[in-house]
Length: 252
View 1 (tube, rainbow, N blue to C red):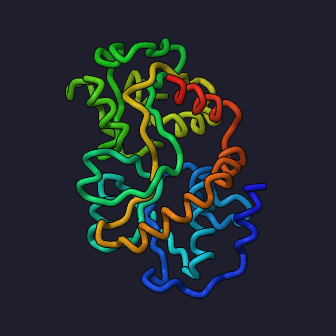
View 2 (view 1 turned 90 degrees about the vertical axis):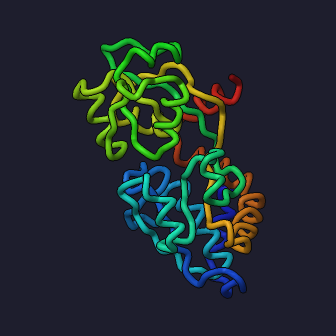
View 3 (view 1 turned 90 degrees about the horizontal axis):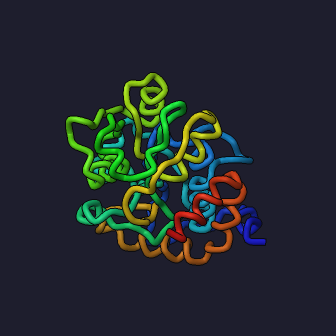
């Protein structure tokens, strides 16, 4: 029943005092459409976008999407006032010095990913001897660094599409990805294979400027109230395999 909560919010509310009339959402331009679609698809806007559309309906806000091609620039763009909110960003200690995070939107684990016929990287230690593709400024890169992959073995790519192209072309031996991104990418390329989990469990959330306390409070209240609906939306957009990987990551 939680899934239908979103559709029940269809009637626009009056603008909420203290919130911006328009909510400018900064999102990674290469985001998987199952998570955030930049296309005008009312039926399947993606998990995160559907959540934000519901938030905007409740508070009478206009949703404005701002794609960001260079993920390393997403926090600076928020700080410069080019957006009001970042969606789909992993909550890390370093980022908390710059932005304020909401409560968890969905769980995150990073894992080593290779492509057949290369064997899976079944131990984190295996990564240190491989050429590992990274995207600068992302938690994927930080997970590789924390795993001890030396700078000389890290190969930078602009975005996820280029990263996976590099893996297919043999430019790198492995990449480190967030679990949900791997599960969605594997739907397009069945030769991708999961290896060891890299680093601890963490969370993806939304991020705002620290001074935007009213917006942060409203988002946290909304996410708390939508807890059951969020679970239903994950089932709507993710495969059974992806959901099984989430369950496995939470157990380990």
